[in-house]
Length: 232
Image (tube, rainbow, N blue to C red; front, side, top):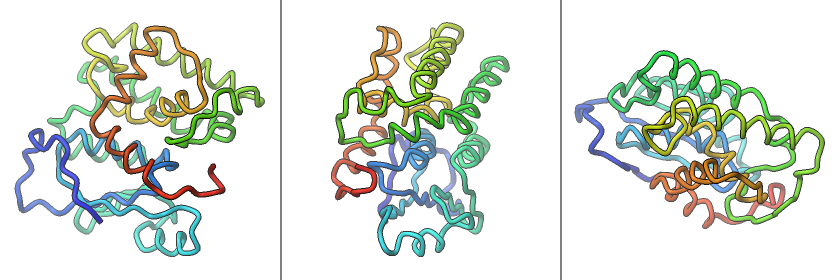
């Protein structure tokens, strides 16, 4: 367990606030864990972190100690437990309104929620054939599998739509960083791992996500983890 306090200047929570603990899976592979980590880091709040190694003999037992669903990630806030990546992100948006995790303008916020929900429920072919592996470089692997090209095309179309309609104020999908960027960050890493070609605008977006201090810290920790054969 280690304490993280990236961007602590954003936080205005009193010192007596209940402690925040984020329980995640192996950082090199756990795409679902990365999403709320980026959102929580963006708030600037201090939090403890529990990393559970995936595919180990005691993985299931260790997860059940923290998670009612038997899955990671899980956020503990005092006596409250929140599970599921998108639910955690929504809770953080309510807990830290000053972090502006959703766009302020209503139409932009509706689109951001729509693309986030689509990421949460879709792109099964991309998930199956191009799993997150931060340290790997496998150009072209899995890209010809059924449904993967369609998933990639849909992601590109979504990114383009968001950037064209709402991205003028900054490098992210809605200008400033939002939950939508956290939800698509694992796809950004997949596009690097598997060598997916992007146009100049989408390449700039990819690079902005990869340059986030929290993303770099996560990737550094993930690359230092021992490999898990099942995911390699």
